[in-house]
Length: 300
Image 1 (cartoon, rainbow, N blue to C red):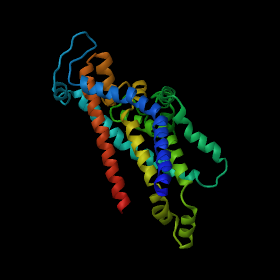
Image 2: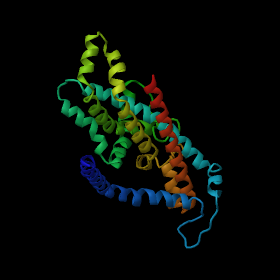
Image 3: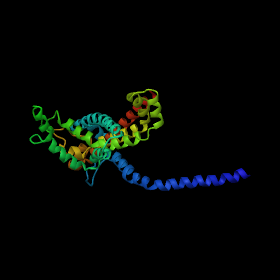
Image 4: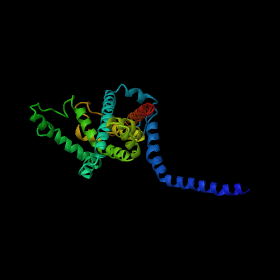
């Protein structure tokens, strides 16, 4: 009897905690339902229609999806987005980790360096794009000025099909370093000092300590940085729109820019919705691939 009586207050406490948890979660859940689930559902439904902001529309089934891969602009945007992501994501993560490792040491003016690396993250992308437009200016830009010091010919950075997309990749990598660096830095400061000291006492060098102690400790953080990088990279728009508007030709057209052009310039909302659904599938595929890579790395 006494055990039964003592169990009841425990159940009430747990149920009260559950209710409090759902209450605290309710604003976030409501926000996700209104601004994520409903728009995603609407995009999926509209992708099966020929809706174009008019009063009349009809159900076309998979016609938009069939037309997607016949559309040269979509194929170009899909390829450019994949290439952009494949280059920017791993390079930015690697560089951010190296910077975080450096800033995790005892160096002078550490606060200044941390602020300097993080500053691009909180700066408006339009402002960043404007600065880099000057840097890549073929006549008076800083990039060609540096080239001239070494006797190299000036480059048409944003108007040459061979350099336009790589130039945007440089800006994308640079802009995303700050956020990744801060996350890595926080994770590095949480690595067990006992393990680091034990590794040092065992005679392990810096690389061995990093590979066997630091790197495994960064596993969950690596996956979080990877997921946010994938989502952010596939959603790149304002940087491309300000710097190249997708040119020259379609050399720097990315998926979000093509979706914008189809939806709000060509008024083909049904077709643009099909593009959006394909982009979501592509993001999910990249996240799944990242998950497999993380599992394989954890099992090594």
